[in-house]
Image 1 (spheres, rainbow, N blue to C red):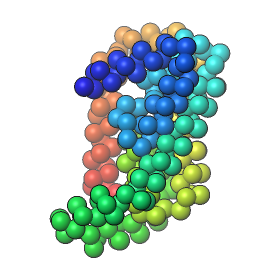
Image 2 (image 1 turned 45 degrees about the vertical axis):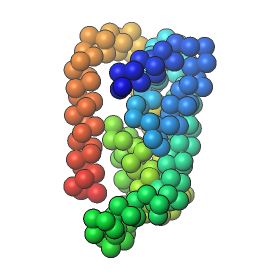
Image 3 (image 1 turned 60 degrees about the vertical axis):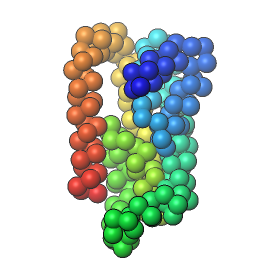
Length: 193
């Protein structure tokens, strides 16, 4: 299933309406979709390097808007979904302590998660569930997601063909590193957040 999603997303990158697809994937990834928008951003910038800025901008804006959707999921579906699960396992009383700690470090958590391969959707939903202040969430998200996508697109613009060659020659290694970072992100979330 993951391979089909990956192939589908890669095919969208070459389509004439790819910027709309990039926006859709960026939006969805911030709230529920498992595949990061980088897999569309990278081929789009490599094929049209002059549009690196607009592609990064689309990615950033759509990702932050998707983050708001994730925030709203956490804020308004917490009672229906998460609360009964926490109560079943006896953790409903501990959530208030978690929310206090999360909100004390919320801006840093959003910044770090927004820059790394850590699943950003987990942070957006947690931010809504804990009631992290929306302005803090929005500013941290804009900074983190903007930095991430503009750095990737900028590097591809400046070092285009050599970067593409590097990626294509080491695709297996890069995928493995990405998976280690992704799993590491879940481990950090589980034991440190």
